[in-house]
Image (cartoon, rainbow, N blue to C red; front, top):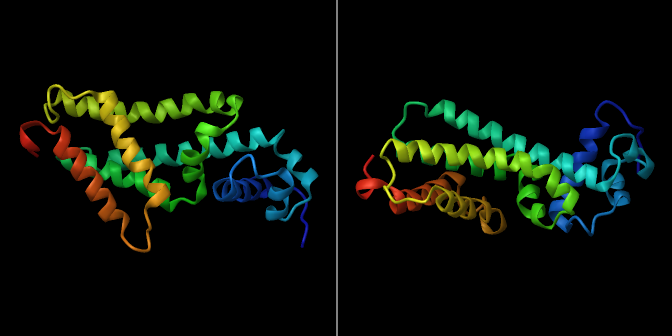
Length: 201
């Protein structure tokens, strides 16, 4: 194995290797030695960039949230004047794209967050809450505009939608179907359930 010393790209290479390992074999089962080997480094070199494995996981989860926020903001710009149903569908597709098309960072966030050590969760919660707040505001704006049923519960609706999108990372096969089809299905089922006037657009 070729061993490299810490360099300008060392931090990212470590994160790439760790994110993949955390996703594939789990956080508790992945040692710093495993990560160093996958990154082509000596184990001690990891401490040049990260204080601990928890510190490394925190950085990975934070990057995963950044990817999702960027996807949300790009979707919002694309549908600034679109009909409500298109707004929901575009944001669902953006969220799924972040999960499936941006490497293991976002998928690792979904899979590992709830079992991560408490200090890691505490560090990530503010960023996680910030992303969830974007969705709550989106649904709240649609409700205020009369596009959602008057008795819709924004919090529960968001959680239901997140459940459908996030659990797909565990069972959806992108080689057998497309993300566009999955997004259309999730958005369509959500829209039928909460849209006002029988799903008027």
